[in-house]
Amino acid sequence: MLAPLLLLVQAVASPQYPATEVLAGFTGLFSDTSSIEAVQAAATRDEWVSFTPAQDSSLGRVLDFASGEIVTRTFHRTIQGRLIEALVTRHGNKVGCRVYDFEATNPIGDELLIAWAGAPPTGRTPLPDVLQSLIWTPGHPFTADRVQISFVPNTSLANVTGLRGVAMAALSSNESSQ
Image (cartoon, rainbow, N blue to C red; front, side, top):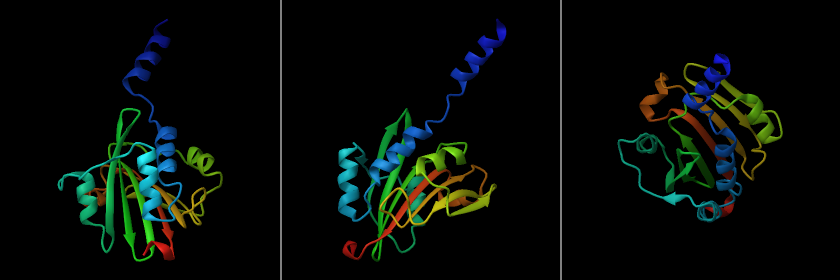
């Protein structure tokens, strides 16, 4: 009798990360990276809210390190009770789309990411103490050239840039986006 009660308490005390819902938010927002306008239309459709991040926030610090990129918009949205932040960038003819859950404490599992993408990754960054990433090029299932899903632990040296938690990125090269 006590064992089922303990399992229930553990489930309530540590809710499972809503990876499927967060990935769906990313997929919806960045399903068409053919232009800045397409991404902004998706943000409006999916009820992302445009905002200006505080300079000392995680997203504010990430923006400070966006070398050479022009940030066109920043958004946020609550997904399953979690604050998810996003930014859209332009660098030359490339449209970049990034989604962050700065409070995530664990990576999204490889099996779930592979099932979500419908294909194994074409690359990975296996630096568990700094950055763990799965990379798809071309960026299946998007119109993007590259999709990268990363996890940066709270103890990583990358934290000085504001980067921590789950980070998702899609990047497209489009002559029309200049």
